[in-house]
Length: 202
Image (cartoon, rainbow, N blue to C red):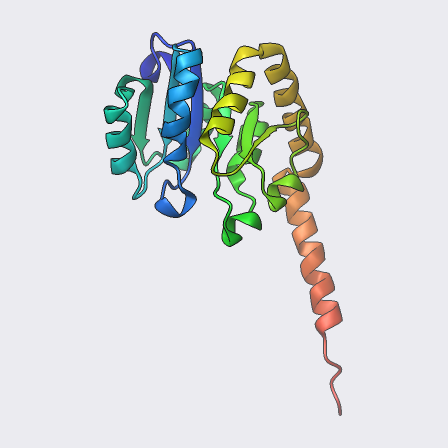
């Protein structure tokens, strides 16, 4: 995968999913300017599609970074782990807005499951699952300089990246596997049904 989509590049930073304006994904292009200045051999993979893609492509072109970006378009879900396994850092970028503050996306768990370190927005819901400097690095939502800095830390320190990636994988195995989540969901539904039951009056 790297040979096909990042030939000649030492580092691959990835974002995947629906790439639409409400999540303000353009911050990745802004951050890429600083990341590439420090790590020139870095390729950014945007795996997925959405309304923001044309603008991001144009922005990358204007910044002279077109060769540092790969836009895949839609890919089958079963191919996502192959891309993740070939990257070095996974990004979970969300803006500081009401809907995002209470949202946890699947992509963080998917990066962890493939044993990859992550950089995530510092938002309340994500703080509940990510332990800073152990399973991920937080950046201030909306601050592309901070996003670039945290990405560079992981690219520049492979030992730290490896430890965080391993800790993330172990966390997924322990708490967030589909089997465990399914059991918890069933238990929650059963309790809700039990407490919400209204006695029948005969």
